[in-house]
Length: 170
Image 1 (tube, rainbow, N blue to C red):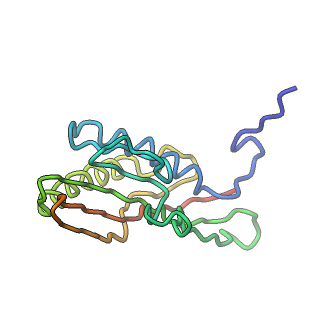
Image 2 (image 1 turned 30 degrees about the vertical axis):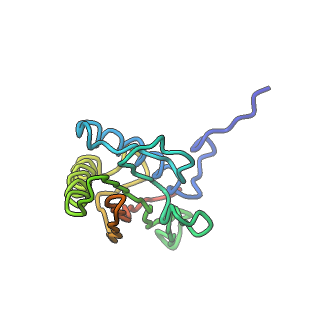
Image 3 (image 1 turned 60 degrees about the vertical axis):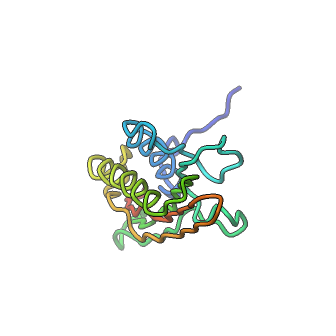
């Protein structure tokens, strides 16, 4: 007997955060595919092996260098109404775009990061609900932190950002 239960089959939802991560992984892959050589390798969670990619995008990780302290989602819930069990969830999903250049140009790394972030923003604006029935807003890249380094081996740029969302849970 198969006792597998899928998300949503119980008629309740504890959080939208987990499905938002899945939707962002698929959506960001779709958003960046037309970029050709600039298309990052998309990772769902911490990177074990990026296959030597010079451009990668990690969804659901705030700091890939510290796996013990790498938060995926920050979300809070409030009651939607006093006489119902529905809740409104506001959250943000942590992401990191990493670009390495052996040519050693930080400017080129930042420019490439800008093109990729623009593609992600355009996709989010066209898919404000992320294709999820309980998400009614997820169209913003919020909080952007840029970390960069340059040495004899080349240039490295990490852009850590969050994608905000709001959902109505049953």
